[in-house]
Length: 197
Image (cartoon, rainbow, N blue to C red; front, side, top):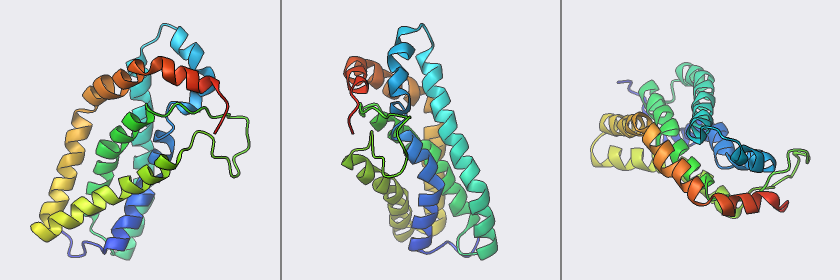
């Protein structure tokens, strides 16, 4: 393993940049189509495939962010590439899947025709806190494990958690995300019909 594991601030910033796109999209994953959700739910379609496509988009965004960050980390030498890979696995694993579970509870509509500057439609205060927590959780797990054992063990466990969640992503998508959304379908659809922040 590399000898430069990375400082806490470097790990925090790297985790934030790795997951920023996926978290921004993921916390409003159903609200983006809120104006069209009545039509989406009225059609006979495979809702699991719809949710899976949303998850794959989050994974793709994380992978796209990983490439330039890996180049910067390699050039700067401020963080281990193994730690970066572990953080990259943690984002589409626990972070993305749990973000999607929490997004099923968001029934706020987003008007896509509204301007983007200072537009907080669909956003609630809890989502700002959630984004911050999803950056702190992997950093906290890494730091606690590196203090309790060593940094190699922390990287391995962080990677293992990410791999386990990714391996069981279909189960998460079917049981928790699609299941929770379908259970709250009418409440969500009612919220999507209202145009308020």
